Length: 436
Image 1 (cartoon, helix red, strand yellow):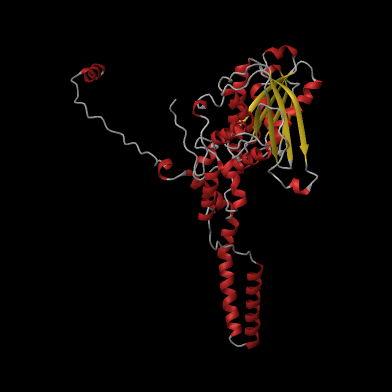
Image 2 (cartoon, one colour):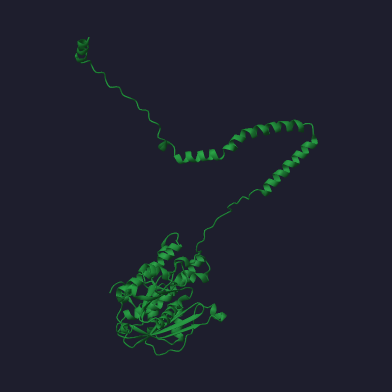
């Protein structure tokens, strides 16, 4: 038995049967066939309205039974018919009157410049004295424009940081050495303020005296200089940085009122950063000395309070150079006439308006840079900066050159001064030639 069993186990090989395939049954891929979020949503609705769903069949049965009974009763009772009819009419009326009011969209119209507004802006641009190379913020180059808070902040940071980077690079002064910061921007006053944005960007020291001036118009640049001067009289041996800019992104007018279309044609992007010092050692490397600041505010006069332009400032005094706020071609023309200036006296203002447009409070600094780029500023020369704006405010600053001033590296006129001055005529100003 044992041997047979052994022989049976170790005898001839039996033919092997083919391996059986085990069929695997997979569950359907619900992720591919059904979006689970809809399953979850349906389950949520089912649980939420379960009681209502259970009561619906019961209510249907009750209503049908009541309707049948009422019908049998009304067939033989005229009074009941009238009462039920009146009740139905009253209930329907109350439901309609107390129900939520539907809101309908009757029509829609999208605002845009009409032909009259476009023609008006074209005429203003033809006579404005602006050239073809002025700057508008990037938010206004989109279709449709994007006048958002984020875009306005981006515009402010781009021009302010660009001016400050060049200022620190050219002067060699470190941000930690700055003790006073004054920023002026009339139309854009975010929270945190523009001065706080600058302090955070350049990591100014903790005890810095920072100020943010807003709503003071195109004359705020000289006001900021005056404030910095007063602070430098108190805080000894320190530096003050003044930043003048304006913001256009959120102040572009998209309507058709002609009086409000003029700023669209004149105002452009720009900023200037100035470094002031009361250290005696800085006299030998400084460009100018602040001689005088005069501030006039006529806000108590109602007519002046509503005024944003000027026609007369005063008699001509002994100045070699003039930086008149480039508010517009007509403004420069009137000042040239009333102050009895020569064309070369207002050349810096006209060329700044042509190249950069009305950059608000920073325009007088573009004009000073133009005079420097032309190599006209000599030791002892005096320059009169005249700024004016809404309110009505007129502010003047007088600077005296301490040396023969050379153009600043990375100045705004560095790549185009050889093309100026250009002739300004009625119609669109000619495009300056890019050839030397």
